Length: 216
Ligand SMILES: C[S@@+](CC[C@H](N)C(=O)[O-])C[C@H]1O[C@@H](n2cnc3c(N)ncnc32)[C@H](O)[C@@H]1O
Image (cartoon, rainbow, N blue to C red):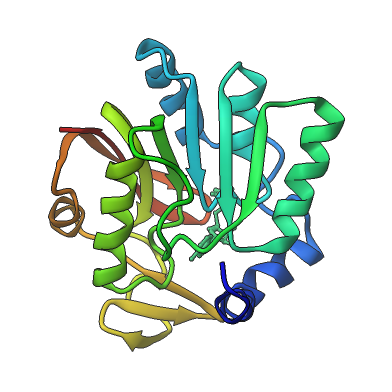
């Protein structure tokens, strides 16, 4: 990443840096239910190498790596990259964490991962153009038939329609900029993926669609 781009990314990530500075385990120490669910599918499909996008302080990356999966974790908060690196050393886990803005081409070769996983990343402030680009990159780095698991906030979320609409479909809610999805909006992004299932889940305090798909 160039110096200027890195500067812009650091400014954009300031909201999350503040969160993690005040609480380095903001999302809790336990893995999410979504991670538990996806791990079963990873195991059944013999996934060995997984990319996590927007990994945060790593509650899910740590769980995957503790269960024998090699994890590459990307996040644009410098704070969490340091946290994850420390945990990797202390616990000797197969996690490589990198400071990275997912609006850029992913720093991996084609067909490199068995699975890509992201929990509550794609509902951040991304334009539709950026979302299509992120999906095309996820497809590129996945092996043929590789799995793509992601979760996004949906229209049943109690914050939907609250706050200030700052861009079409994106709301500023107390400084957090969030996009909410319908099933149709998810399907429109999934060119080149076969949708396996979508289910709704409440993860205090948000309502999510959990999505499982496979590179077609
Ligand atoms: C809602 S948090 C979820 C964290 C983690 N997935 C979890 O569930 O514990 C979203 C994460 O995405 C990261 N993020 C947001 N926009 C990003 C971007 N453009 N590139 C990389 N990471 C980003 C934030 O720093 C934050 O850690």
